[in-house]
Structures are given as C-alpha cells and as structure tokens.
Length: 500
Image 1 (cartoon, rainbow, N blue to C red):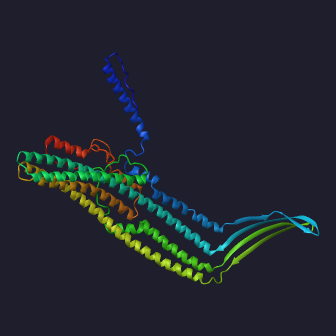
Image 2 (cartoon, rainbow, N blue to C red):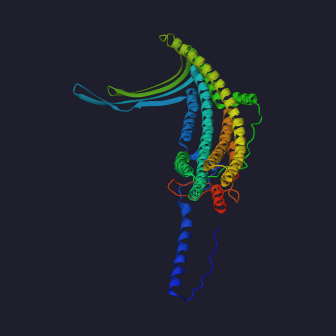
C-alpha cells in the first residue's frame, strides 16, 4: 500500500546543513526506487512454501513434463487404432495426350483415366484385439503419469526439506562456533591468571577451527541444495518457510501394518500397472492365435477413361462392388512362433506382477516402521536436548567452581549441538517417511502436500522465514543464534536455548 509523503517546508539554512539534508533526501529517494523496482526484476520465488514450490515444479520440472508429453502422445494411439474399421477413400487419375506417327501421319489423341476406391474393413479379429490392447496401454500410460506426479511430489518434498536441513545445520554450526569462541576466551583468561592450562586453550582453538570448517561445509551444502531445487522449478527458491515447532508428529492411523499392506495391494500404482501388463500379454496371445482367422472387407470402385484410337475417342466407365476376404494358410511357421513368444511374455508379466506385489508389501512394512521409528527417534532426541541442556549447565557451573575442565564443557556443547541437529533432521525424516508411506499405499495426492504445507511456520513474532543466501555473503544470524549469542554476551554463560 502506497502512502503520501508529508510536505517539506524549505527554509534558508547553513550550507552544510542544506547539503546534509539534500544528501539524506536523495538517499531516501534512491532507496525507495530500489525497493519499488527490485521486486519486479527478481528472478526467484518469494516467500516460497512447499505448496508454492510444488506448483512451480508442476510447470517447470523436465522429468514430469516428459511424462506428461509421453502420455499425451500415447493417448492418440487408441483413436488411431480405431481407424482400422473406418472407411478409406482414395482417388487416382492420369490426364494427358497420346501422340502417334503412322505413315508420316501424326495424330494426337486423349489419354485420360480417373479412378475412385472406397474400402471398408468388415471383419478383422486381429485388428479388433489390437484396439482392446491399445485401450489397456492407454490406461497404463495414465497410471504412469499419475505415478510420475507422485514422484514429483516426493522429489519436491525431499529437496525442500533437504534445504531446510542444511539451513538448520548452518544455524547449529554457528551456535556451536559462538559457544566455543566464548569458551576459548574463558580458557585464555583462566590461563593468564594461572587457573587454566595450555592444553585447554589449544583444545578450544582446535574445536573452534573445526566449527568454522563446519560452517563452510554447510554453506556449500546450502548452495548445492539450492541448485538442485532450482533444477526442478526453474527459478531461485527465494525465502522458504521452515517447519513449525509445533508441527504434529503422530503415529500412522490405523497403526496396523497389515491394513496398510492391504491398501497397498489394492491401490498401489505400480501394482495396477503390472496387472494391466498381464492383461495386455493375454491379448497378445489372442492376437497371435487370431492371425489364422480370415479377414473380410468391402470394396467399391468407379473407373472412367478416355482413350483415343485412330482418331476416335472412346469413353469407358466401370463401377464395381466387391466383397473380398483373405485366409492365411501357411506363413513359414511365423504364427506358431509368435504364439509361443506371446505365451512366454505372458508368464514373464505374471512373474513381474507377483514380484511387484511382494516388493510393495516389503516397502509398505519398511515405510510403516520408518514412520514409527522416526517419531520415536524425534521424541527421544527432544528428551536428549533437555538432558543435554541440564548437563551443559551443570558442567559450566562445575567449570566456574574448578570441578570440571574446559574440555568437559566443550564436549557437552558438542553433544548438545549434535542432538539439536539430529532432532531437526528426524522431524524431516518423519514427514518424508509419512509421504513415502502414502505413496506406496496408493494414497498420495496433492492434499497431502497441502497438509504438510500447513505445518510450515508462518511469519510472525514467534517465527521467521529462512533466508537463503550465497556462501560468500555473511548473512545475519537466525533467531536461534541471536538469542544464544545475546545470552552469552549479556551473562557470560554458555547456555543453549530450548528448542522452540
């Protein structure tokens, strides 16, 4: 929303103050122009959440577009197959003059011919079965397109949460680096007054350099994840929404793996595709057998010619209506060989169908157990964070009293940072396992993406967007690091804020 600027009252004033105000006014104008123009010139998405990224991927992902165009191409095959039983009409002709020389007498006479043929296939068992086979193949093509869409949903979710995980890892690395730096300063101060040891200081310096290396690694990981996500959506993702602290992590319902296996065997797209392939192979056997059956067709034709001879022009016309048929008697054994091959292909399709059912059943069990495992892991890691905070606070107090060493404090900080990183990763793994379970049971759709999207954090006082920045830009620390760093600066204590 645009607002009007207040009126400026200009007065005569000293030259230096005038220049200062003019410079300030010019700066405000320049900044305003940049703010107004920059949104129009950005080549990246702004305020992107999972659903927005998915919508961009639907339009720009090359793999999905290939699957979509392949289905569009396959959908033409059925109407094309049905044309076998539609009439075909053709017209052919020759128009010219015939010149002859007999006894020094040259004559030029007309030589015109026009013919019209109408053909209609009345009975062709092989072509009829071909139409049924093409219809099944079109259904398989539609199932493959739906599976490609499900694959797109999972790839978007995987890459989105991989980017979030790398951003979280950078936050944890920065918090760890700040805490170790403060602990290194304390070790140096204690060494100067004779209360510490050089080994404590060297250990703190070594860990600080390792923390710096971790930050560099996470920056590179972030840039890689940005590039991978951009490959799908075609533009820079811009700012992405993080997962809310209160995102619901629940057990699958029903919490019975047998019911999930039943759903998978009934609705899984891969199983449906293989089932259609079995039916297609049956039709292929029938087609091979029906090659021996006769074909019957109707032909109507009209022929007209104008041919001159000895100076006389003869007009001739002929109309015919024919019923033709063809019965294959012997084709060198090709029919029997085609039938044998079709039967082998049918057995192969049945084995693939059975293999797919068993594989999907195993995958369903695996994903079901993964959802439960990720949930339990996240809960355990959350408890580990609380326990780690208490352990760190106790060791800091012991360090201040001279009862524990600086290495003990650094170890506690390292363990706490690891628990925080693993907890955040476990939440993402839980969501991805949930989506995988939905896919393997044939229930994944866009509503699931919308449901997960509602778990993302909205901008506000208790949450903030995660700004994606290149590795060479020294970005402003996130909310977690700010609160942690301010706590260190104000109190001198190296404590870690509670998640959320």
